[in-house]
Image (cartoon, rainbow, N blue to C red; front, side, top):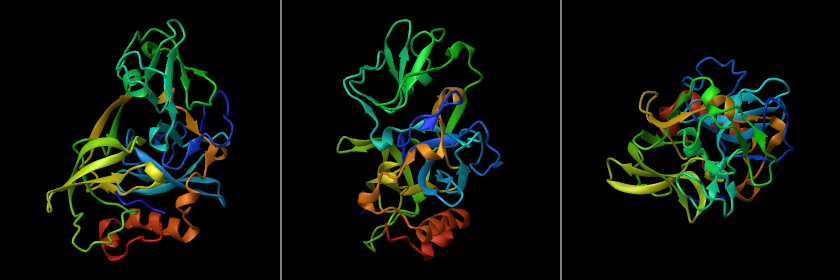
Length: 288
């Protein structure tokens, strides 16, 4: 891996700074961008903010990108997973998988006072008739959600998960001319030195037969994207209505230490995603 230099619920807004660059997202309740995300369920990553129009900048796993509204009253995005931004609930054990710390959103049964991680909650562990409270970060207040038994249909998440076919993305620099990132397959979704949980992707590159680690959310960066719109994988299902929507004022610029992208950088990133892999082969982003 090459190191480089909150949302709101419809029932109330969270304080600023709860959502960080690198948060993994899906389309929200007021989505009006047709199939720019390649369809409901596809996952993307927050990579920046546009102050001029108060929009949130996202690169989707498929390589597409766009600017999305974060209120007031219009919310294009929901938090899918904030574990890549180092959200952790210390010494909170998942009742189902027994994970010793819960990374990302925490779910608490108000009847039994037990906790679930997001994966177990979305996999219908514990009693689906029980009502849970969602805690977005370790500093967030709990937010009650409806029982999963009464929720609307679950959505299949799609994008860069184990088995997806990928190529180099807009943040991946190539300092070694012998490196070949033409085509690879996702082997594992992991972490880096116990940080950026689910924000690091282990890829097996077909031509060189080597394994490397790359960022997908970690440090607010997107090192890899799907090779084609059809070469995605699934990450299981989720209850869309139970995920928090994202408010522009609740997003913090959390990666100044690595250099927050300038307007020109962001314009290039978005241009890359629109024009695809051929553009990338001719012009790499080396500033970040």
